[in-house]
Amino acid sequence: TLATGVAPQPQGSGAPSTAPYEIFRASDGELMIAAGNDRLFAILCAEIGRPELATLPNYQTMSDRVANRRALHDAIESRLLEDSVEQWLRRLAAAGVPAGAVQDLKQAAEHPVVAERNLIYPSPMEDAPDLRLLRLPLGDLACHRLPPPKLGEHTEEVLRNLGIGGPG
Image (cartoon, rainbow, N blue to C red; front, top):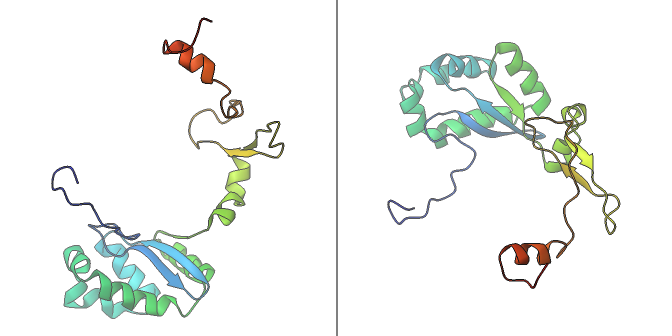
């Protein structure tokens, strides 16, 4: 935007320089597949029962796959729609193809790893006794955080520090 004056458009889930490296639909949800090189692409094609895709001229190199991303996506997704996310993840993991289920916010918050790492913690406030907040998954997760301030709680102090408020 700064260099061209043109606002970027949404790119979807795909990596702009790699294909297939994006979200695909399955029969019961979505999965992210990251076949980021020729070897992984060939394995993916074999695992979805479409080994010929890896030999077609339009898909032989990464550049070819990126240039023909839409058609490739459709070819892969048409096969993925025939089975569940769980079944595809099991097959792809066994073959060494990076993939993962796409989860909504509720599913992500309820994932066992979130509880295991204590990423959501209680932070009750007077007007929100059941408030829970999300920790950053970095650094000291045992560190206790204070609840967020109430609206206006620090206004006088901030204004005073800026030299706007009255005497202290």
